[in-house]
Length: 310
Image (cartoon, rainbow, N blue to C red; front, side, top):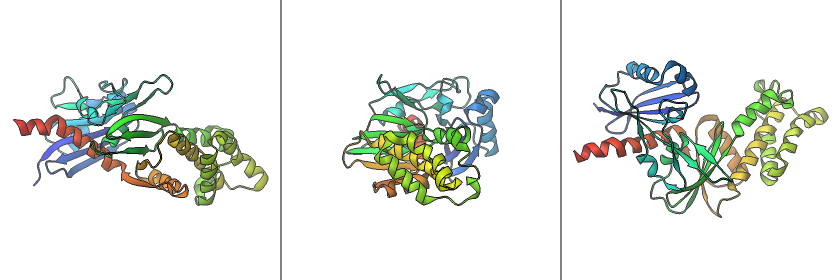
């Protein structure tokens, strides 16, 4: 039977994911919950982690590698940022040890882009990036990691040269819940998705992203004047926001840059539909698999190679 080697944890703002990884790299146990940073800041990071470790009977002598919001200023221990441009391997060397714990717990740093005209930060996504792009990769690659705050990263010859954050998911939530357009989408959840409306809005926003806020309002005006359904209005809003995001993200990409989509579930399907509609070539990597590979690379760099030298 494979022996446990280390614990891998992805600790988000509102989610918690943990894997017990064996010496052969396989998953021996898994835990998921909604105990993200917001909850852990109140209940205690160490307490929540130990509860999940007890549930899977994790050995007390194996280390844990953590990425995500546990390393934020408001998190467990601040892990800081590595400045871009930087090599992917630099992420592996910046892990911060959590003091006062019997178990060796390390938290990976985020990435920072300190340009005054385009300041940006990421925390958690850098580990997905590490698990998605080979350190010795050649040429230019554009990595898309959709979410509440979508991240688009430019990697050239294994170096992160820059990245951009798009508040697409959060804007969709705010617009459909708290703006005048909330009336337009009322009842959309009970209707089939409108793929035609999504594609039309996506293409319109991709071609003319400067008209995005005008296009958004047509979700309301189209309903009043032409009987657009709630599902159609919702699809129009989603397509407009994603189309504008993709146009902005690719505005500085080189010709022929390969797009790697790191996603799973509903977002994977949505962005794959968008790339196909826009005739953009891409490859998809599962988000969970990417973060596990990134955490495993960090664990190997910190502990496993050290053990092999001893």
